[in-house]
Image (tube, rainbow, N blue to C red; front, side, top):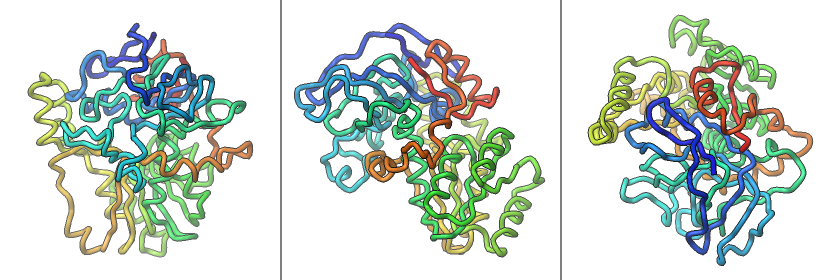
Length: 396
């Protein structure tokens, strides 16, 4: 089959690889019909290269048609249409029972000290072959896949794999009071969808911050009050502008949908780049022990949120030596929640929104739909924020 493989920093290729097959009785094999390109994939493309191996198959936002199931998969049959969560979880361990599927005790990558295995996401998360391919082996298919109806286009449901539950959890963790206010930093796919979910769930004021004109315009069309970073000379000016909209206090909650690739901090960027170009034996340990994130977005969030407010971190951070302004966090009595989205915990809450009325705007959420053969260009275009690329779907 054809698959998108990682070959090095900023180097992805479409190659012929062996077809997946049933290996365990709880496996399924899915013929993929759509697979997303996620901002997290860009971390592998740019920052997390010390944890990658040439030939790794990328991608973790799949949906498709069941081709084959193992003997212990009773709820799926060939021909079923399914969305596959980006994390692999068993559904019956303590963590899964507690709604923490990203901490699944059955698939935890204990050798790396990490949580549940993820599709297409570095050796830290199991080096499981990913979903930017024609076919996908799905472990624990007796629990993970979400059956969806035949009929509507893939765009209606594909975001259940990652974008929708990630944005939903970001809003849930933000704890926005009914009619309250939230600022979303970063209006890429997750930040954009978080704004939509927040509005659908009763937030009174939603502020969006970014510097990409297409992202800002897209959010404004959905009723978000936007702030263009390019129009401010400093973080302080931005914070004051949003405080002026909230009676001088700041928003009740701030969602950081940017993560480690925030602008700013030349020193942190230098460490990331150095680790990425070192030989794997050197770069991996450096990144694991001494990696530092670019924390501009997080520091802005801490400064912006009102006293007693909540920070929800949904952008991916990977640093192990990040300096944090603990005095400010303590003094302002800020609550902070974070983590990978627990897809199956939220999928039942989200499905009622995926109707013909399309309140979250999923049917036209993608800006680009491309074949797998165009993956190298799609990665470059997305990484460089060119051609209006906000959300890309591969259609194998």
